[in-house]
Length: 115
Image 1 (cartoon, rainbow, N blue to C red):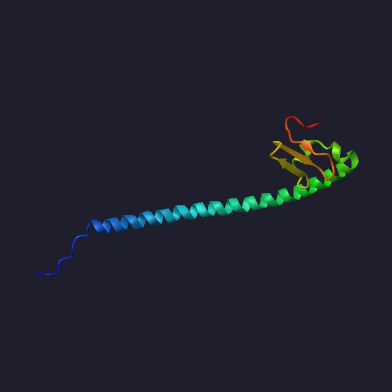
Image 2: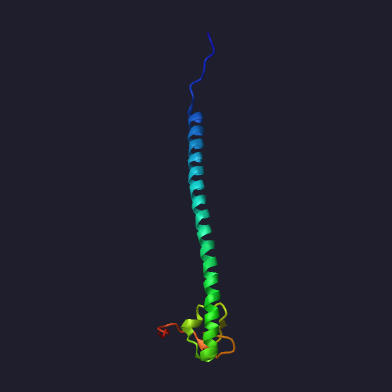
């Protein structure tokens, strides 16, 4: 009698199925990693744009403060300033914000905008 070649059993099929499943997951992961890379790139670009806008905003706000006085700046205008000073007083349950040496104002942001 000649050599008998055994028919592939369950172990071979399971290995093949697992290998295929792993390669499918590799493809999925690669797709998600590429999406994350794109999102990180966009986020970085937006953060740089925001940093530039904040510098411009603070320069304009500083000019405004010099014209109207630090005590006369609306809370709504201070909340976007990187240079505004925010003070949290947990014992009093309050949060205040001010510009430079201006008087601290309680941060209640309801309809604080004036046109």
